Image (cartoon, rainbow, N blue to C red; front, side, top):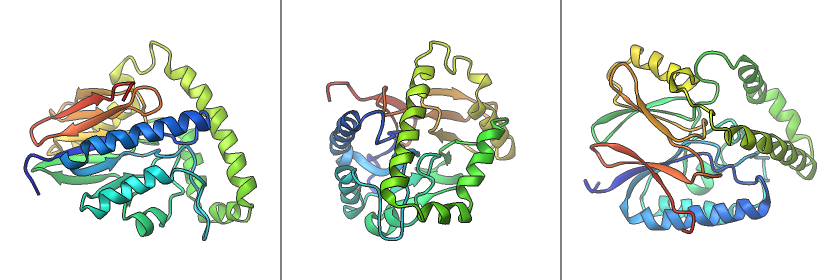
Length: 256
């Protein structure tokens, strides 16, 4: 692979909310951004929550998102690996994205060597201390029996109800994220504590990359590793890029 090409990270697009119009505009914005970086990309990492809700029936997938899925398929067809670390909103991704598009889907944390540096990659939901209520809920969502029972519900009803619940949840979350003190103390965030614990177990890690938290930020942990929380494509339109020497956060201009 060409040494000058870069590795890009994008996270938390949450397609489908808060409105279909807003979702469509953000989808087109991401496609334009992907077009602008395609010739410069060695590998593309999607760090989770690409959709606000996704469920695959045996022969049915949610309506929409065809432009973005087509663009990701183009990346794969042109030899650019695309990885998705399933988040809490797209954990019901089964094999459609792998078989139809060629995206490599990961459900657990991965340690990977990228340009001779050691990266620790995961979406970030349910990681770190506390948040026991969500951790219980996640186990319920991952239960094969519960997934089978949801499949028995007609998609018009099941996906419709799920999108309505997601919309109400997202509106409340956006209000919380708009508060000035949201994640203002890095050391108090679960992902900081999680990275510290992981770094103690594996001090050779050079970089941690997370999604989930929505607020873009970078900081160091005790072993000297850099932690990057990629941010979101709901309000901030941020991404991370690694050139082999350093990882930096960037922001797409609103007018792009």
